Amino acid sequence: MVVICNSCGSGFTRNYNLKRHQNESCKGSPQEELMEPSHISDTVNAVINDGIQLAPSVTKKRRLPATHSEYDALYDLKPSSNVRFLPETIDGLANRFNELFPKYWAKKEPNAHNELVSLLDELLHQHGITHEIYKKMNDLLATSIGHGISDEMEELEKKVVDTVEYLIRHDKSEIEELLNTFQSDELFEEDVIRLEQLVGNWLKNEILGKQLSLDDIDQILRKLTSSSIPRSKLHRFEMLLNDIRSNRFRVYDIIHRMSSILSDPNRTSKHISDCLKSMVKEGLISEEQFKSLNKKIKDLDLENVISEIKSVKIGRGVDFLPRETPNLLKKLKESVKEFAEDGTAVLRQKILSVLDELLFRKVITNKEHKDIKENSKVEH
Image (cartoon, rainbow, N blue to C red; front, top):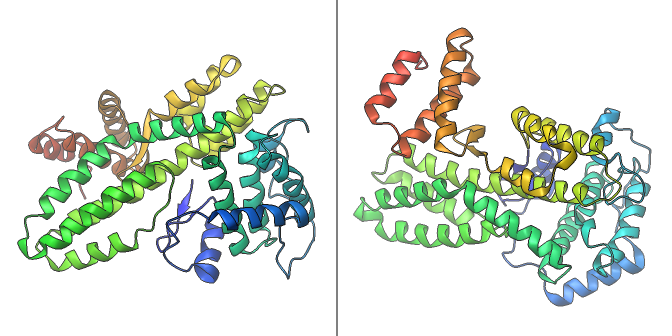
């Protein structure tokens, strides 16, 4: 699961990295544009000639993973593979990055993007590089797609965008409806118009993977707390934006990771299965998705993976909310039955989330929404 910094919108794969970023290096809103061409050239030349810049106070002690499976599940492939073991030391991580980056930039290893990102993340985790270097190199890798690293990468990004668009279609509709209701307070009409412009631009860029800051949007939402707009609707609006960003991160991570392993001629069924298991542990896919994909393990391709990704989304406080209405109804029935036997808070949240989504889609009426809550006893 990717965690998001509320101040600048940066994403991290570990809570640990997020906390360090917030405590030590977060500077609020990032630049909306990627690196300037001259900076790209200078940075590329510096990395190729001198290697990645390590942190001044780096200690080069060997760090073992918490468990062998932590790395085994993700990188247990032959050395010639596109996906490999992550080195355990800072020196090893830096050496691998320095070996791979020039080949990637020269378009000799266009599929190495995912491994380079993983190396940077682990270097940051081990305090091998500063947050400044971490962000600079990630920005550089982000520009590489736009600079024509490969047609394959562009096609992969198109698959990410198409999948995200599909998953968030109802979220975008709800945002539009909320913006319409916000216009009811004439005293804040100009603020709502500005909010609509900002959100439209943010959505367009977010879907494409360009992480714009939410600061200006958050500022207007805070101002609207003084209006007649219900706080619950403002909170829901903010949640929708966060859900959209989280869905984009998840889709990107799964598609790129699976593309890398599925395109490797040395892969085995075990490698693929181990990677899927790791994604379950990280909260990227559910147990049900794992079982579905694992059944097709011998003939699994990226289209199978994308089809499975499209079955659920992050939404309404639930990590795996069914995307299709028939599956929402099925999940509701299953969860209500399970709640009657084991009334946990997690199940209660799932039922309420599914009910709210069905209500928004006008599949159930307000009365049915209320009756189901009462009959299933999920209301506090």
